[in-house]
Image (cartoon, rainbow, N blue to C red; front, side, top):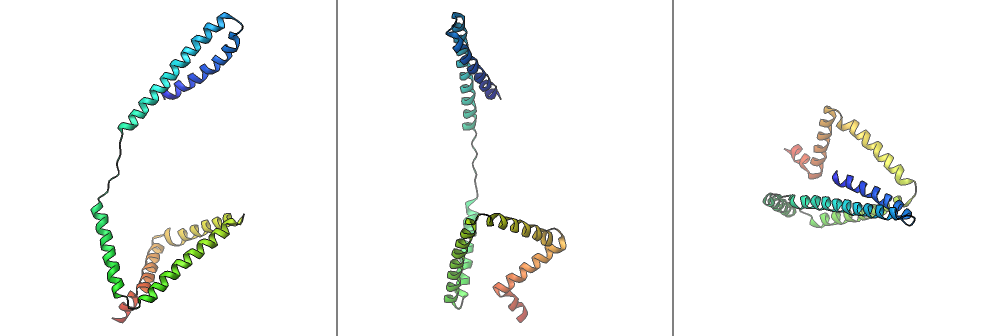
Length: 174
């Protein structure tokens, strides 16, 4: 606050100095007024600089550090890698998995190109945004707004996960 007040007073003093300096050529009284205004301007600039120094010193004294327990994250990463290795060893047809992974990467690359082309058309991105907002609103209303529909969404996701991982076949086969 003091910095803002000092800054505004220095701006006002600078404006007054320019007015007095133009009249200083006319009378000797204007010269002394101009000098006193310049001194007050210099003084107010020192106030601004000293308040800025105090603010920067206060910022330097304040140190915030974000810390995390790296042992938890490294343990989770190791667990994920080990689980991935086990699943890879259990995979019977590894070439098919590699082909699917490559196909997924190519599909991602092609979709990026298509989105870039759509984005270059002048009006189409805004229309796509409206479509996306409409779909988001529908999804929230359909699946997230009510408790029964949230349960239905969770059940649908679990069913899809079972179909992907093959867990639905194992449960049905028992």
